[in-house]
Structure formats: C-alpha cells, structure tokens
Length: 225
Image 1 (cartoon, rainbow, N blue to C red):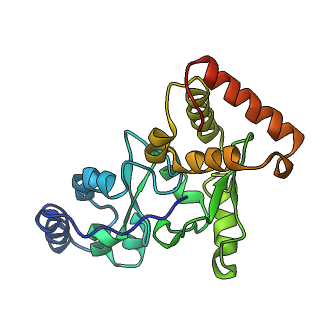
Image 2 (cartoon, rainbow, N blue to C red):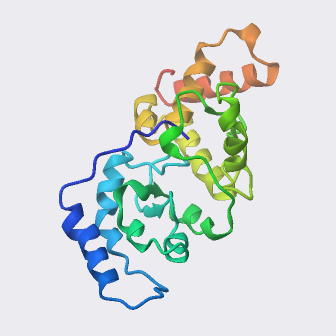
C-alpha cells in the first residue's frame, strides 16, 4: 500500500449515481434487500483518482472494481442506510480478486490513511511487510491487512505472480525504474534502495543477487537502476 489522496467528487456523479440511487430507494418498499449498481458509472473516475492502481496492492490494474469501503453494500442495507451505497466518499478502487474476499475479511486499512514508508517490498522474496514507520494506533490494522484472513497482501499467490512478472521484466531490461514508478512504485523504491546500499549493509545473499541483477541488465544493454 502507498498513500492515496482522496479525489473530489467527479462532475456528473450526482445525476448519474447519487440521484438515481436515491430515486430508486424512494420508490421501493422496505425492507430493501438489494441495490442497483449505479456506482459502476464512476469506475473510470476511480481509476483516474487512484492513478490506475488498486488501492491495496499499489499495482497497476486494467480492470478494477468500485469497493464500498466505509460501509459495504450489505451494511448499507442492514443498517437501513441504503443511500450511503451511492456516496463518492464511500468508494475505493480495488482489484477484483481482492474485492471477492470482502464478505469474509476482517477490517482492513484504508488507503486514504496510509502514509509514505508504511509498507515496503522485501528483496529478493518480493514479500510485502509493514515497517516501523506505521504508528501504534494503525499497526494492528496494517498487519491484519497483510494476513491471509485479511487481503493476503504479504504473499498472496496471484499478487506474487504479478510481482515476479514486474521484477523479471526489469531484470530483462524490458522496463525501467521510471515505468515502475507508475505501475509498481513499491518495487521501484525497493530497487533504488538496493542499488544505493553499501555492500557492508547487505547480506551475502543480497549482494550476490544484486550482482546477478546488474549483470543481467547490462547483458541486455541497460544500466541500473
């Protein structure tokens, strides 16, 4: 996870989402058991607001979903607050595979509260971990977000495949640090730290791995970082 700044409500949101949702609610008899997905209208706006990245994996995705984060759809219904399902401030942008876990996950950290340096990619494992920069008041929630019963961000199989793909593309000189800054900024940060580190500050394994990475890029005609 990386910091994500809340974006203002996009033009057209009121008439295409909020007003339609409230009109539908007003015309229904209670209890309401389901809600029409007018929020799908703003998927593209959320994509732009999150710079094309999932709010939790902090990796570029081509097909994301609108996540009802503050109150889930079921909570909006069960708490008799269906209108909250049509509020921009309730939405986050999420990878579909993670959104499918929502019904059985504990509370997770909000991308809007994450600060720089709270999470880092560990090399060469590519595991995601919480750093000491996370304040005590947020630490348990941050750890829960990484666990398998949360979102599995630490080492979830599908996420690991994506991370390995990005790293291999970098190793093969098919991409650059500047590209990773957009598509996988946590990996870009980890690589910069690796190349800037003194040998004495790295384990023997990591020094050897760094040397292999440098050699592979040079063989492909690219420099490091």
